[in-house]
Image (cartoon, rainbow, N blue to C red):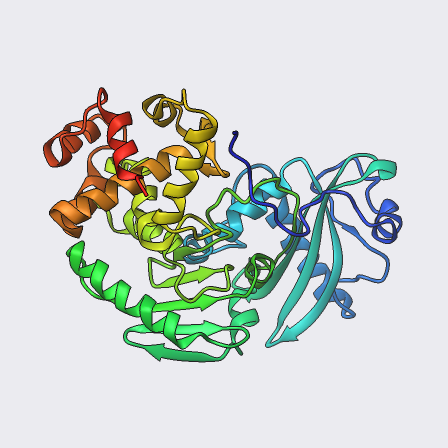
Length: 383
């Protein structure tokens, strides 16, 4: 079985007919950096302000399409804080023509802009991105940033322990309290200084992306990462589009990368296995017990399967759409916890990014070698 990407709503690059007709007249310019405007989408009713906005936007987009950021129209703090948004924006803008779909004033001299990035001839338009940008007055023109703070300003909030949850819909307080307890526990196990966290829980992946201003994204895979949940703003915030107040798989993954003194020392197959042990696998959330059953079923279908070979295939092997090496590591993590405790299991995460020390440590803790790996896993997944 081959790994597959989780589907995401609105990822198609095909334009609706009405939008294609509206934009077809706006993409004849041979210059990718020249801004086009959909009918009825001036930047401002004030001609002087519209000219200033267009000058700033043109400079911002020209540098963006060249793979750079304009120091005049972005700030280092914004680029670091909203790196997720800016990276997505840059990917979508390369080799695509920008078209302003909508613009309106949003108070205190700021403006909201909706910009599409298009490629291809007018009769076969391809839509890479639609993004919202907040244009904020700066010292030398306008600064462009995602509208995350504006879009989330009115979310209700509740603080449990040292976690402040902001959420759409209703909050599951039991799951929220379980997350807060887990956060305190794992910080202690990793010898981390406790710190407050803001947990922004959205009810869908589209809601998470929309909060950042990513209205449409033609990417074909969500990469099981940022769409699902990620730490940002120097680890002070966690945002997830899973609708889950206790989304531990994404939080644990991110915590390892954010807190390791040497991120290159993380052995990611095992780190993902630990995340699955604590929080269930990815978005689907299957527990280690359920995952074990899936592997038993797979071995019944394919009795010749060699689990050491499957582990070595990395992301080239999957069972029930779950990467095999992650799940096999979840079984090993559970065994280490049962025999040596959680601290020992967590220490394995930092055995080296190339995995060179992984089997040395497995041998020390569990007596597992490459030669007896298959038989060990068979024992660990017994019903």
